[in-house]
Image (cartoon, rainbow, N blue to C red):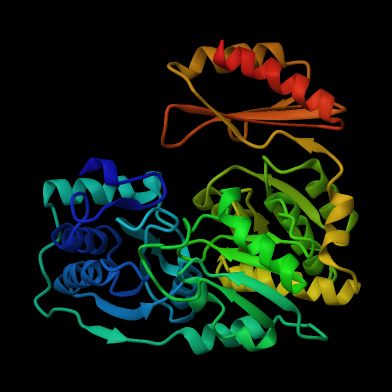
Length: 439
């Protein structure tokens, strides 16, 4: 059982690792831990999301909780409902981009503040394992259905400032992107791909981080002459974007594009994932914004956004966070803001991205290691002459290059990223660091 309680969520294979009985126990433990009385619950299209909802809701109701059942929804919609309906918390039933046999729970307290491993998931695990639930309520709670889609659509539309309908290829991956942008589809000329809900993911894995999942959308963008493409993951809290030439827009550079639209309305604080290209910080600052590095992981980023009153943050994995959506993801909002920028600038998105493509990055390289500490000690010593900081792993900056190396939260891996002014230097520095990491 312990293997399903992760750093950021609860996730496992149905029904071997996660089933209705365990879902009920998790519902009771969530209510015991949080003391919540009103909880929003949404779910994705996997065939077992419905029985898991029944189990989870049964556990919550047993503890006297009022369950606001959103039915099928995207994860950003569940965050929006949490804050808008002034709930005490929310649970999204999804395994995001994982294959169809997986499922899980993304947990929040009020205002869509996430519960992570260090802020409650491990406590909930202990309550489940010890069966140390608070006594069942004398008066059980109830389940109330609520359709959040109209309000979420109205919310998204309030940011639209397009002067024409852009042609957009949308790869829904048979998943919840269909719900994420249901309320704004008419603002675009949409060319859909894989727009039938199917929790077995018959066409491709719902993970825009894997470039091979983007082959169909890239070809379709070129074929129909689209302004851009948007490829959603399974629960639509991540999205990969394609430019008008069918090229992948790197997710860090997409952060810089959205920052430009936001900053056109005035100065603001924007967070960027510390693995991002230097071009991102430079773009934010040159457009009048305050740029702050963030560590990796949505729970950390959301907390840092609140601490710094940031309006937006972008992560290299394709998560884009907005203060307006209770400091949580909204890929519908990301899509609208990119469209605003294209219309405002009157130029194709490939031209808007081009000046940001000025450095050479290695991408994130994973290495399995037996013992992390001596490797990090060696790196710390060798690169101490740079501008070194340890916000998340070790980073060191030099005039013409920089790197970050950090441990995985979930696996015995070190993750390395290197960026330099030239490809030659990037490759040389990458190989130099990999020699230390891999021996």
